[in-house]
Each structure stands twice: as structure tokens, then as C-alpha cells.
Amino acid sequence: MQNFNFHNPTHIIFGKDRLSELNKLVPQNAKVLIAFGGGSIKKFGTFDKVVDALKDREIIEFGGIEPNPQFNTLMKAVNVVKNEKIDFILAVGGGSVIDGVKFIVMAAKYDGNDPERIFLKGAASTGVKEVVSYGTVLTLPATGTEMNANSVISYKTGKYPFSTPLVYPIFSILDPTLTHSLPKKQVANGVVDAFVHVMEQYMTYPVDGRFQDRTAEGILTSLIEIGKKTIDEPEDYDARANLVWCATMALNGVIGSGVPQDWATHQLGHEITAFYGVDHAQSLAVILPTMMDVRREQKKDKLIQYADRVWNISEGTTDEIIDKVIAQTREFFESLNVKTRLSDYGIPANGIDQMVKGLEEKGSTSISERGDLTLDISRKIFEMSL
Image (cartoon, one colour):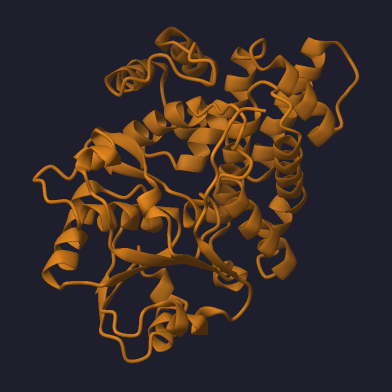
């Protein structure tokens, strides 16, 4: 097992009917900005419950944070935070809202005139030492951002990640009942997103991280067991509760500590989303099966382990087992009605050039857990994903 540091300060409040606890969690004298996306939190009553729980605090709204949060929109929120002297931000929504708030709380404390530096040059380059305090109310299980220090911001024609311990949420309320009204497509995307988050930390090479491997395999198996059920039966509390917790545990640092990680599927997927507007999880469902195929030699040991422990596939030659488990993974995504080919989303072969160029512009020219995935290999993965 590799050396690692692990620290996660986020307080999780999990279960039914927990919104009333906001009154204890948010400072009593705080001026609060409630940040959210579209109108669903108002349509289904979540917004009113949040406001009621905050009692007599002064509240300002900021809505309209997009899926794949846009820099220009977030800067409008930054100006509100500064002008209104906001003390506390409450992010109510899914991964995009929370990712956006992570940028907002940093940018509001940055004195420079180039806040895009946060994600273009790295958060540490800003010299910011503290951020605006914030917490979250999760309404869409998928990204795990409610319990980590990561964010992805859309800027011009690209998606840019940043990470800093400064942006761990102080708390996150995870009430599975708040997700019952989600459209089936969003729930399916959440299952796929969580699944691929685990795979990016698991599908590398063995380092005898037994706890990490078994925990990762447990999350993957659970998602396979409850994935279709929680889409078809949204008010089955236990199925949905397991999805919520699996998605959080998939990317809160536990299974990735002490093991190699490979975020190449995400890096290629970001280009699909940036240029063609494909949902993030859909882009991952396209790339992951091909990534496992193209990288079968580098990931051979883990592919065999994954086949045996997660899918109970153990008979045949090494290549036959790998072929079967890749097909099984693709079939799982398809069973959730998440398509797995670029052509399914209308992306033509002549679009690959701009996606490869996007990788090059971001410096993603030697990626993967081994740093040996070149632009030529990325091109091959795109081509085989058609």
C-alpha cells in the first residue's frame, strides 16, 4: 500500500426529516445566501423547508447555477457575496450547484482581478487562506462533492477541475427523500457517475490495498444491485438511501487513499461534454468500457479481480474474461438507459480532432495512473468509442 494522508472534516447529517437541524448548523447571526440551480427545489417544496429551518436569519437567493456550472454565472454570485457581505452560503442542489459554490467561496476571498486563476493555475496559487463558510443540502446523489474538496468549473469551451482542502463543506445534509422527485435520467446518471468514480480509483494496478479494494468492490456491487431498482421505484427509501451513501463514499477520499488513481476517463469525458453538451455521466459511460479495452494490458490484474469479485466471471482465458467483464459493464450502463457510444449522442468521427486538441490545450498529454496515456492513445479511445 502506498503512503497517504487522510483528512475529511465534513459533518454528514444523513436520513429522513433532518432539514430542521439547519437551525443548529448555520450560525445564528449569519446573513445567508441560498444558492441553487433551476426551479425544482421550489417546485417540490425543498426551498420553503430550508427557509423555514433557517428561522429569522436574513436570506438572499441566488438561483440559476447551470449543470456544468459556468464561470460567468458564478462570478455574478461572487459579486452578490461581496456586495451583500454574506457570512454563510447554503448550497441546495446536486453536484453542479455544490461545485459552483466551492468556486464562489474561494473567489469571494480572492483579491486579484483574475479569479479564473483558481482553476487555471491551481487554488494554491491564489494565496487565499480562508473561504466563506458554507454547507450543503444534497438533492441529487452522483458526484460525491458534498464530502470532498474537489470542483469542476466550465470556462469558455472547457471544463477545469480544482481541489483544495479549503473547500470541504462544513456540513452536508443527505436526506434520501429529497431525491424522490428526480427524473429517471438524473438518477441513472447518478448511478453511473458514482460507479465510474469508484472505477477511477480501483481500476489501476494492485498495491495490496485490501481494505480499499474490498470497499470499492462493495460500492460497485451495491450500485449494480440497486441501480435499476432505485430508478424504477424512486420512493423505495432503502434503495435510494443506499444510492445516496454509495455516491458520497465513492469520492470522499476513503477508497482512494494509499492506492494509485486514474482519472483519464474523466479527462476524456470532459471534452465530450465541453464540445457536445453530453451529460457528464453519459460521457463517462461512453469512455470507460473502451478505456478498459484499450488499456487491458496495463490494467490486466485489476480487470481479472474486478471480473471475479464484482461480476463472478472467472472462466476462460485472460482475454476472454476481460472481454466478458467489459461487455458486462457496458450492458449495466445500457440497462439504466445510459447509452455507451459516441454515435448514440450524434457525435461524428470528425469531431474527434477538436476533443484531442482540447486535451492538448489542457496539458492532458501523458495521463493515467502510469502517466503513459498519450494523445495518440486518447485518439484511439475516442475512435473506438464511436
